[in-house]
Length: 293
Image (cartoon, rainbow, N blue to C red; front, side, top):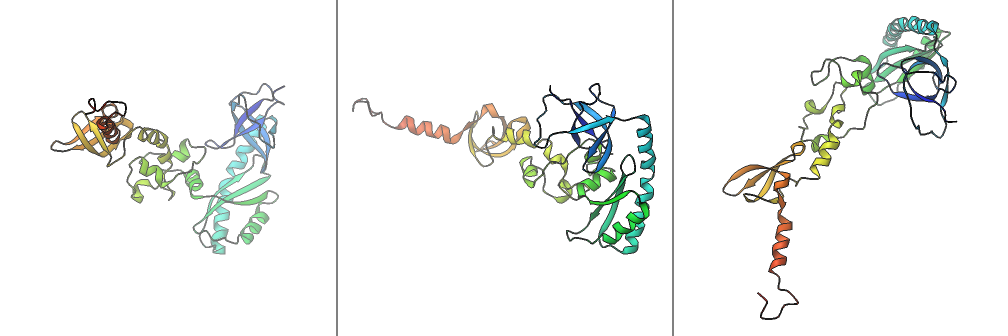
C-alpha cells in the first residue's frame, strides 16, 4: 500500500517539507498537524497531497497526529512571548558588546519546549556566543535555547519591507519559499546594467528576480546571432549590433542604409551563404573539360 505523503509548511512563506500522513488518512490541505523534526515537535499546515512522491534515502518522517484547537491556542500564546525574548536577547547582546552581531528574530516551538534565536553577523569571522546562549538559557529555562545563524537573504525575508524595485513587499517575504543560486551571468544574459544599484537587493546580494526570466532569455539567444556577427537580410549583408531575445528580433547595421530591425526568420547567417557561394564556384569533378565553367 502506497503511503499518504503530504507537504507541510511551518511558516506562512516557508519551505514545504514532506511527511507520511498514513496515520491520518482523511487529512486535507489547510488542516494543521503535529510532526517530529530535527528541531523538536512542530505544528505545521498541510499545503498539498503529494502525488507519486520520490522516496528519500532516509524515508519520510510520520505525522504524529492532527492538531487540536488547544494546540493552536498554545502556539499563539508562545508566539506572543517571542517579542519579549527578542528584546531581552538584543539587550543582553548589547551589554556583552558582541561585534557585528544582529539579533533578528526569536521563535518558540508550538509547545514552548524550544526557543530558537536567529542572528546574523557582518563579518565572516566566527563570534563567540557562549555567554549569550548561557544567559538566555538561564533566563528562559526550561525551554531549550538555540542560537541559529542565518544569511542576509533570510534576514531580509524575516524583516520584510519594500523591495529595491519599489514593490511594497519584497519577493522573499511575499512568495519565495526557497532561494535559487544567482550569478552575474544571469544579468549579462538579459542585458541588464551591471551597476550595483541595478542588480543588488536590499539584502546586499544579487536580486532574486534575476533568475525569473533567465531561462527564457538563454533559450531565445540560442536562436539568434550574436553581436558583431555578419548576417544576410532582405536589404543586404550587415553586422549585428543588438538583439532583443524575447521579441526574437535583431538590429543590423547595413552599409549605406544604417541600422534596421529584422525578425529572426528574415535572417540568414553570412558564413553559411558564403560557403554555398564557394561551393557553387568550384568546378564539378565529374564534368568534362567542355562542361566546366
